[in-house]
Image (cartoon, rainbow, N blue to C red; front, side, top):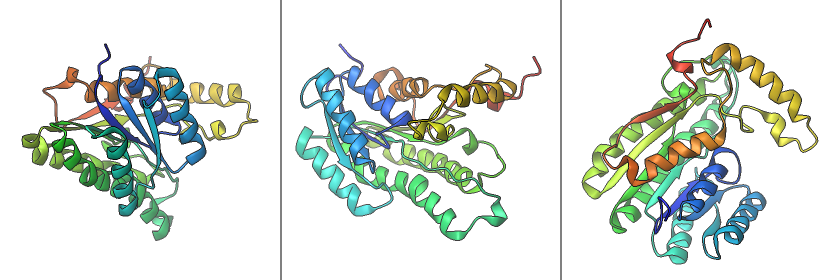
Length: 265
């Protein structure tokens, strides 16, 4: 018996990183998973792998650019046709750009908004009615450590992640009576391609980049290390499963204590 037996959950940005680990864990816990991403080759491979591991029909890939309304409509229709319903959504897809705020081009700012904020809004709007029709379920939005504080050089990213928390609270209040719980996860530094671009290079020496990241975050994070995407997936599972049945509208920080303060010890 898995925590998500009988559930159908759509995960965006699921081809790699946090989304990949969420898809893997959810499938292991009994869910049928819709792997949604713009990275078709990687997403298709993951869906095929999950089907081989957990049984045919357990995972489906759909190409989804989260910032495009028509692609959300197509993805929802495909998932419904394949699985009969959708009763869970993880708005995981996101991008990060580094720049000084006053030097950030408008096009770059709008690109980050389109994926991180508009994508979450469109996801809630497209999937919430499906969840209600299925008899209730959950939405988990991905915010960030920077959605609760400031950080230099990530102005566009931080702005969108603050806004995602606002969307989460409004959606939670509006959808509670329809049986839909909505929460947000706020990861700190997590060892994915977003924080460790070397992971995108198949020829990179990851031992070197990993050592550099460990040294850097050992000074900043009280727990003394960077987080793992599997740990974020475990939090997303908690918020998607019945373990969190009396929780909605809340941000959950998973950052090794970073937001609490820098440890001198």
